[in-house]
Image 1 (spheres, one colour):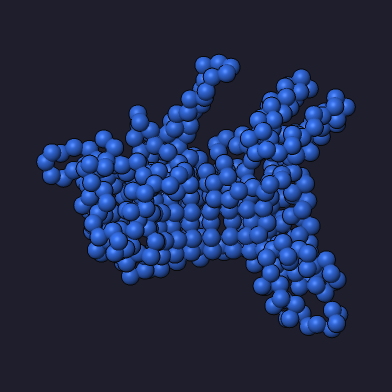
Image 2 (cartoon, rainbow, N blue to C red):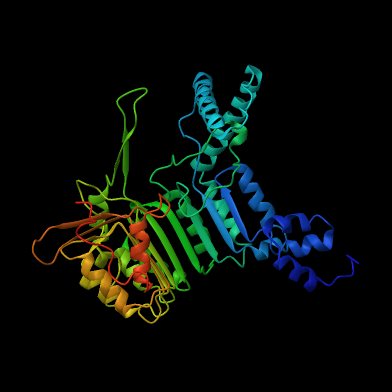
Length: 440
């Protein structure tokens, strides 16, 4: 029976299965494996690692799987480019073992057994090999040439994701670095740039017209390119329906010594980023994307000392209309309610999802803006979150501030009320933000 089922039926069966079930399904026989190959590798998550590169090459050479890859997710975590000595490796292991002990106690799970010295030496050999192969790839630009080679086989590719700091995508529960007893992190500077550049170049060289482009955290320095170079690549992005960027504006960590907590200062590169954004380089690029349905532009922080990295008018042409725009997310920018409202009105007929996080109105009021959004737009989903700042427009003229947190931080009833208000929930007929529930 298995051998007589036509491929279309097997394909249809696979279309209803979860990916874990598809992987089991393909083990039954050759016919099942061929049908499952159309689904099992639709999204591939990989790291800059020899093992993952070989996995990609194997898929690229498969006659069925290679033609059904839709999305590539490149996790831009590597091991520290400063090689550990054996003594440092031992110290690193002891620290990780202490952390594992604390986690095991909190989660009521058994503690992994301590490694014997001979086992630790074997792991160190693997670490040395992993370190050397990573250095070789980076020094010889093998990642650029390799990705160009394999992407030429992924003829159905529609989406590229570069995830740094686990923004947008989480890496797998297992990584190719586990055999080296080390945990990868965001060691390559500027953050995200090398990984994003290499995979974009590969897609460009193979003339792959993407539908979705996602990157974050991505250093603002990525956009330090000659205008002529960016203009040359615009036709390559002409089919994009979704652009999602989390732009990194710098961070510094410091502490007073062993046993003390780390102090984190965000937005350390805000002035340089703001200067670049004022050139309109990003704004002009976004304006050229005529097919956009989803636009997500978030800066990952602001600075108490330097302010915000961009104004709304620096990243969006306020008088331009994206005819298909359905979802808009903006974060850590400044604007005035009049400019924001004017832009939103232009998209009243299409825009259904709106998220504004950590937005500062320079001289105008959220208590005036929110009723205008509610009365003008027809939103299906709204999210006003993070630090909401503005100014009262009537005496007494004073600063407005509400800390609504973000949904991934913790529940906030006031945030829920604001978002229900914007989607015209009858249970919230009046603007929930008041002078009395502000945080100033």
